[in-house]
Length: 473
Image (cartoon, rainbow, N blue to C red; front, side, top):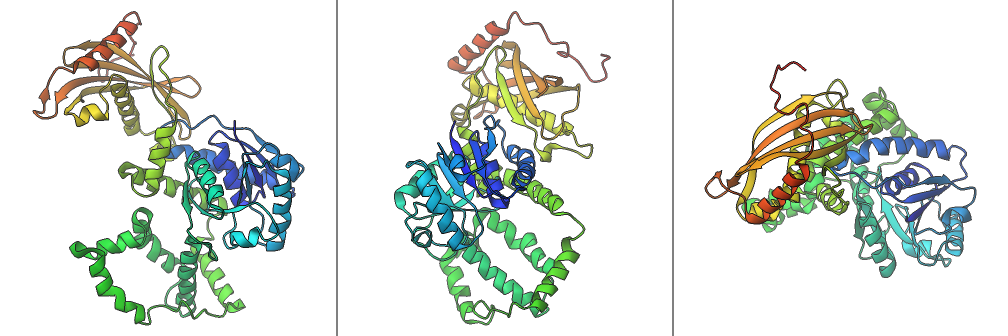
């Protein structure tokens, strides 16, 4: 079991703790703040609710969380040490001097700093790289790595193992990459508000209703390439390049950050979002991010591609008795107005079980690419108990019959507490994708089906098998 040490348990440190912990790492936290345990516990509650909802496979068993009385205790035996103390260089020098003395020589040592360069952090002999994440750390995959090349390479490999996207910055620079972009937008936003062009809410609407969604999947330059039409990026640059000379922004002309501007922005922000607590806003943010990232996952775009790659690396359960064809957490996006899983998603979960069983018998993506597959001809779902968002859902699959082109499956859907929540009976027909007509499966698929038929031959027929709508229990 790998171990991560978190030095500083604020919002970012707590996010790091959650990211490592929910990916199966043991986590040791050191923070002299007497409220640190409470704060990290609250972050973990949100993370446990949100992170599993990104995946259609179960994350590793949660690691062990401990709070240590000293920094030396926290870093003992650590594979990764992440510093997330306040942005004061003198404090970081003090902390990293002790980390360098106490941590194992082979451990990755990262700083969450958003502004300091590695040369500043290592000026007094510390061994550290910048590993700058984005809030919420347990959901957003980006980590900017800056510093020693070998150290960054080691860090990148470990970060990919917990579902993150390491971006190595080619040269150190103040504020790295992402925060420089954010700072430019922030400065222009201050002028737009100060000059009365818009309110904080209107400015946020301009981002979230338009280019913010584009940026989520394509970033800046790919978005502009599309804006150039069929002629591409060169046409875009020729058309809009001259705008760089126009007075569209005040990026180098920063408004005086005085009390009046602070009060103006604070008042407008209160009017915009003051009706919700920070915790409520965080949950709204997390639910929105999950929905967007699951949508991006369908196409493998942006952050969705990172989730897909990480999910593929998660170990699928080995068949024991009835094969486990689904083992996952029910996401918030599957819940309806009653707070439990909507009936549509019972069908989706059952379809995932059928897809997984097809993979088990060799009717996988390569088989489909070769022109053969199974089509679903008929389903019947029996709803037996409710399943709440955030619950574990495990599906086992039984072969009731398999003759010629037909495959008759029965899915048992259990909640995490072992209760049978639903069943789904499915009839699938093998199809030649060239003719779009039914056909016999390939010999290697037939062989695997026959193996399951033999293994399930002596099993009792489920009580729900063969039911029809309206039939009495």
